[in-house]
Every structure is written in C-alpha cells, then in structure tokens.
Image 1 (cartoon, helix red, strand yellow):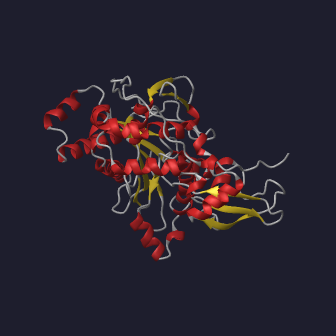
Image 2: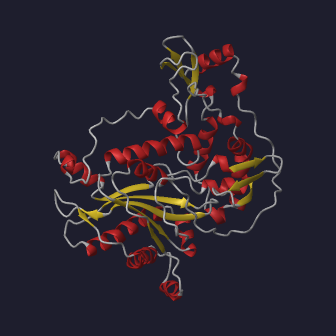
Length: 442
C-alpha cells in the first residue's frame, strides 16, 4: 500500500474562509448596532486576527521551497498566520505542540485527575464584558483546589501540581466561561514524597468555589449583597464541579490527548456548512443529533467573542507546577528527583517542527517525496514580493492565489434577537479514555 501523500492546504477553498471573506467588512460596519450590547465592543485585535487569517496559507504572501534531495521534486509551502482559536489549522498545530510540551516538561509520572469548573448563566456576562475576570476565575479555581487538598492532606508545603485552562465556549459558540483542570491526584508534602489524595467529595469543593467566585464579583463591584442573597435562595446554585476518573501515569497517550482537549478550538470546520446565497451557517453537534442555523454575521460575532486578546494567557500553572516552582527545581537540578510511580523516559525531546506536527495531526509526512518517497528539505525562504510574483507567474499559480474581492451583501438582514445561553456541552476527548457517563452540564 503506497504511503499517503502530503498536499499543502488551500484554505481559500474552505467554506469557513469564504464566510469570513464575504462578511468581514459588513461585520465591522454593523457590529456596534447589532452586536456590541451582546458581545461588548469590537476589539481592534480581533480585526487584525481576522485579516491575518485571510492571508494564511496564501502563496502571494511568501513561501518556503521544499525540494527532494533524490529526484528533485519540489513544491511550495505558504506561510501560516499562527493565530489562536480563529484559524483552525494554526490552532490545531498549537494544540498538538502544547500537548507534547505539557506532558514532557510539566506533568510528572504520578496519578492525575481532570476537573471542570462551571458558573451559572446569570454570571457569565460579567466575564464577557471584562475579560480580565477570566484570569481571576482561574485563580478562584486554584484557590478552591488548594484549600480542599490542604484540608484533605494537612501540611504547610502539601500542594498539588495544577494546570488550569480557561475556555469560553459551549457546543454552539454560546459564551460559557469555565475552567478545565489537570491536577495531580495528591500532593508533594516534601522533597522525595508524593501523597495520594483521598476520594474527592465534590459537594464541599463546589461550595468553596462558589464562595470564591461570589467574593470576586462582589469585590470588583459587579454584584451587590442583595444579588448574592438572590443566588443563595436558589435550590440549584448553577455552580458545578465535575471530576473525572483517576488517570494512571501509564496512560501517556490519554494524558496527552486530554492536554490537547483542554485548549481545543472553539469550533470544528467539519461540522459547519456555509450557505453563501442565504448568508447562513448550519452547525452540527458532534453526535450529529442536533444542528442549529445561524445568520453568518451572528456566527462571526460569536466567534469573535472567543478570540483571546493579544498576549492574553488562557493556560496557567499553580502549586507544584507553577513557573516559579519548576524554575527553582531546575536551577537546583532537583526536577529529576521528584518521586514518580513510573520512571520518566530518557528519550530526548523531539524538535517542535512544523513537519512533525503535520505528520502527527494528519498522519502523513510532508517531507516525504510523493514521487520517490525520498527525503525533502527546505531549500529557501521567499519573502521578496517581486520574486514571489515571478515564481508564481512562471508556475501559473499567481492568479490562482489571488483573493477575489468580497461579495457585496445587503445590510438588511433578518436579526435573530434570541440571546439564549445554551447548555454547556463537553465532547469526548479520547475513545480509549474512561469518560464518566454523567458528564457535566452547566
């Protein structure tokens, strides 16, 4: 059976690209009137991200020449935009790279657990209009876990290692800030020891988390004491904490897949259908049991609400996994002395190269020659516009890679005024991983 052949992507032909291209200008024109009240003001960084995405994978913006050393076969590889959450291809490479880095440089070979912390719908709008609160939400989650674990395992230095990723989306792009947590199922009371935690009692952890979030919003002036009394009067508070089964350190593939899952993209291209004549998007749930129709502008406005600000960190490390703790151990050459159930592998860390990431994502080697299966390598980087035009013109690719002007769209589009927050929906992240049947809904 012949090896699969790598074919450079052509994002210009995808429905998602065409939707962004058709409606970007119109979105900016109508955003203040139609969407500012729902999603907050149109951030300048969002405009830059969308423009960079439209240039992603376009040979007109520069490329690398890839050539086979054996038979001389050659192809051109366009530059990528490297944008988070908005560009599906670039974000997927980031997801794979993050999963590898976390498991090789942060995660220790001890049991872990996966937690999900959710907040009620009535409080979500505060985090939408003030994105700085997302950092505070991460701290609330950490402080709740720290209090709970130190209560279960007393000791001044008894802290777990914690990685917290904040996500802002549900299954149909509704704004739903929640935290995914990878935490050691126990703590490190002192050097050379790892103490396994007792069974988790979510009822108490949820109460601590609720108190932390309410105190945060009260201190920031977002809610009043009367509002707090209203929340406390509810039979169901709306705060939820989910805890997955214990993850044994031998399940390295499941751990890496879970690490990818906690920073996954906000949507899937495979589950969307773009109807340009109707300016509509049809989006399906992963189980294909539900689908929802969106006006194209509504879809893009919802997508924009999930784009992080420039330099905004959505993943943070606390306790034994904090940057300070890791730095101190590495400086003292004590990182390898941390107790592990299994000894860590001695293999060298792989280089974080685009070719290896593509091979891992699509199971095809982009440096394998499609003609002779020989080794290909990058022979030059072309960035000069005059040289780019000459090469593409000689190969007959210049016109094929030109972006056509956006299609004019009428601004008189029916507005769906329903602003409902859909239930929180989690996707299965690994078929081999044990996922609890009662996965959380927020």
